[in-house]
Image (cartoon, rainbow, N blue to C red; front, side):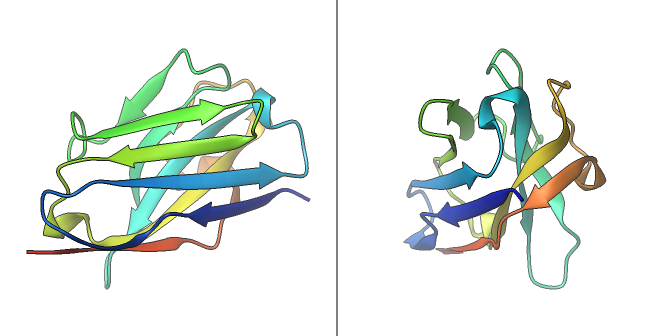
Length: 126
Protein backbone atom coordinates (compact mmCIF):
# COMPACT_ATOMS: atom_id res chain seq x y z
CA UNK A 1 0.00 0.00 0.00
CA UNK A 2 1.32 3.42 -0.97
CA UNK A 3 1.37 6.10 1.68
CA UNK A 4 1.72 9.80 0.98
CA UNK A 5 2.19 12.34 3.74
CA UNK A 6 2.11 16.06 2.97
CA UNK A 7 3.61 18.76 5.15
CA UNK A 8 4.56 22.40 4.98
CA UNK A 9 1.20 24.12 4.82
CA UNK A 10 0.30 27.09 6.96
CA UNK A 11 -1.02 30.62 7.20
CA UNK A 12 0.91 33.24 5.26
CA UNK A 13 0.37 36.70 3.84
CA UNK A 14 -0.05 37.55 0.20
CA UNK A 15 3.32 37.67 -1.52
CA UNK A 16 4.93 35.17 0.84
CA UNK A 17 6.37 31.78 -0.06
CA UNK A 18 5.84 28.24 1.18
CA UNK A 19 7.32 24.89 0.31
CA UNK A 20 5.15 21.82 0.53
CA UNK A 21 6.64 18.36 0.85
CA UNK A 22 5.13 14.96 0.21
CA UNK A 23 6.91 11.90 1.55
CA UNK A 24 6.08 8.62 -0.16
CA UNK A 25 6.46 5.05 0.97
CA UNK A 26 5.23 1.63 -0.01
CA UNK A 27 6.51 1.17 -3.56
CA UNK A 28 9.31 2.27 -5.87
CA UNK A 29 8.74 6.01 -5.80
CA UNK A 30 11.08 6.73 -8.68
CA UNK A 31 8.97 4.80 -11.21
CA UNK A 32 5.84 6.94 -10.94
CA UNK A 33 4.73 10.40 -11.95
CA UNK A 34 3.54 12.61 -9.10
CA UNK A 35 1.07 15.44 -8.96
CA UNK A 36 -0.15 18.24 -6.72
CA UNK A 37 -3.81 19.18 -6.61
CA UNK A 38 -5.77 21.59 -4.47
CA UNK A 39 -9.32 22.04 -3.32
CA UNK A 40 -10.71 25.30 -2.04
CA UNK A 41 -13.79 25.54 0.15
CA UNK A 42 -16.86 24.72 -1.91
CA UNK A 43 -14.80 24.05 -5.02
CA UNK A 44 -13.83 20.99 -7.00
CA UNK A 45 -10.36 19.54 -6.73
CA UNK A 46 -8.12 21.12 -9.35
CA UNK A 47 -4.78 20.34 -10.89
CA UNK A 48 -1.79 22.40 -9.76
CA UNK A 49 1.36 20.70 -11.05
CA UNK A 50 2.77 17.34 -12.06
CA UNK A 51 6.19 15.84 -12.66
CA UNK A 52 7.38 12.78 -14.53
CA UNK A 53 9.11 9.87 -12.85
CA UNK A 54 12.56 11.13 -13.90
CA UNK A 55 11.79 14.87 -13.65
CA UNK A 56 12.21 15.47 -17.38
CA UNK A 57 8.65 16.78 -17.73
CA UNK A 58 6.70 19.16 -15.57
CA UNK A 59 3.26 20.66 -16.08
CA UNK A 60 1.51 23.53 -14.36
CA UNK A 61 -1.93 25.01 -14.33
CA UNK A 62 -2.14 28.45 -15.84
CA UNK A 63 -3.05 29.93 -12.47
CA UNK A 64 0.27 28.94 -10.88
CA UNK A 65 2.66 28.93 -13.83
CA UNK A 66 5.65 31.12 -13.14
CA UNK A 67 4.99 31.18 -9.38
CA UNK A 68 5.05 27.50 -8.35
CA UNK A 69 7.75 24.91 -8.99
CA UNK A 70 7.36 21.16 -8.63
CA UNK A 71 10.40 18.98 -8.05
CA UNK A 72 11.25 15.58 -6.69
CA UNK A 73 14.04 13.75 -4.94
CA UNK A 74 14.00 10.08 -5.86
CA UNK A 75 16.57 9.26 -3.19
CA UNK A 76 14.50 10.85 -0.42
CA UNK A 77 11.21 9.60 -1.98
CA UNK A 78 9.80 13.09 -1.72
CA UNK A 79 8.05 15.48 -4.07
CA UNK A 80 8.02 19.22 -3.40
CA UNK A 81 5.93 22.19 -4.38
CA UNK A 82 7.69 25.52 -4.04
CA UNK A 83 5.08 28.27 -3.96
CA UNK A 84 6.11 31.90 -4.42
CA UNK A 85 4.16 35.14 -4.69
CA UNK A 86 1.21 33.54 -2.99
CA UNK A 87 -2.22 35.04 -3.51
CA UNK A 88 -5.42 34.76 -1.45
CA UNK A 89 -6.93 32.69 -4.27
CA UNK A 90 -4.25 30.05 -3.64
CA UNK A 91 -5.97 29.27 -0.34
CA UNK A 92 -6.92 25.58 -0.39
CA UNK A 93 -6.12 22.15 0.91
CA UNK A 94 -3.20 20.85 -1.13
CA UNK A 95 -2.93 17.17 -1.94
CA UNK A 96 -0.13 15.18 -3.47
CA UNK A 97 -0.96 12.17 -5.60
CA UNK A 98 0.87 9.24 -7.14
CA UNK A 99 0.20 7.89 -10.61
CA UNK A 100 -1.41 4.48 -10.98
CA UNK A 101 1.02 3.18 -13.61
CA UNK A 102 4.77 3.20 -14.05
CA UNK A 103 6.61 5.78 -16.13
CA UNK A 104 3.66 7.48 -17.75
CA UNK A 105 3.60 11.05 -18.92
CA UNK A 106 2.30 12.96 -15.90
CA UNK A 107 -1.39 13.69 -16.11
CA UNK A 108 -3.50 16.64 -15.03
CA UNK A 109 -6.67 14.64 -14.34
CA UNK A 110 -7.27 13.52 -10.74
CA UNK A 111 -8.75 10.14 -11.68
CA UNK A 112 -5.46 9.09 -13.28
CA UNK A 113 -3.84 9.12 -9.87
CA UNK A 114 -4.27 6.06 -7.68
CA UNK A 115 -2.96 7.26 -4.34
CA UNK A 116 -3.54 10.45 -2.39
CA UNK A 117 -2.23 12.06 0.73
CA UNK A 118 -4.40 13.48 3.49
CA UNK A 119 -3.81 17.07 2.40
CA UNK A 120 -2.23 20.13 3.99
CA UNK A 121 -3.98 23.45 4.44
CA UNK A 122 -2.55 26.57 2.84
CA UNK A 123 -4.19 29.85 3.80
CA UNK A 124 -3.09 33.13 2.24
CA UNK A 125 -4.35 36.32 3.83
CA UNK A 126 -4.62 39.59 1.94
